[in-house]
Length: 162
Image (cartoon, rainbow, N blue to C red; front, side, top):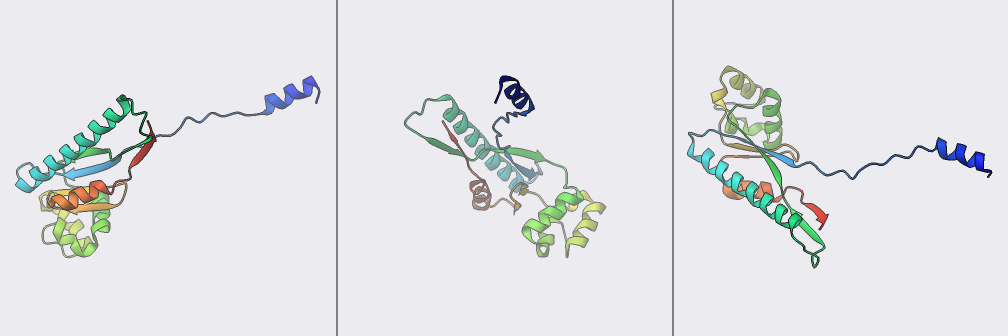
């Protein structure tokens, strides 16, 4: 290939650099009611778990662990809201827990349609706490510590080189 042909060939190449993609954190939402003791306990547990995960990931990133090839961490973004869910969010929550449990999240609801109607009528019909892992399609109703910790433990672990 002559020099001018090589230049034409090189100029026709489209090189694209794609930086490595980092997985965004899973979002865990706590539908919270500060006046409810169960909700306060769930809030405290989630904040501690979030701080613990962040603390360990920072230590792993800042320290020299040349003897260690990989670190695993379950970091997540904690979203705390006192607002009731939107209709779409409630639909997702019911999908995650099963529509037969509609009455567990919306007071006196018999099914999904009834839950939607009751939520629209009064946001206070939504029972709190409800913890939702939107990325993985899971929800925990109430303050059961083992269920909440199980939800967090099942978050995909980000494994990376140190």
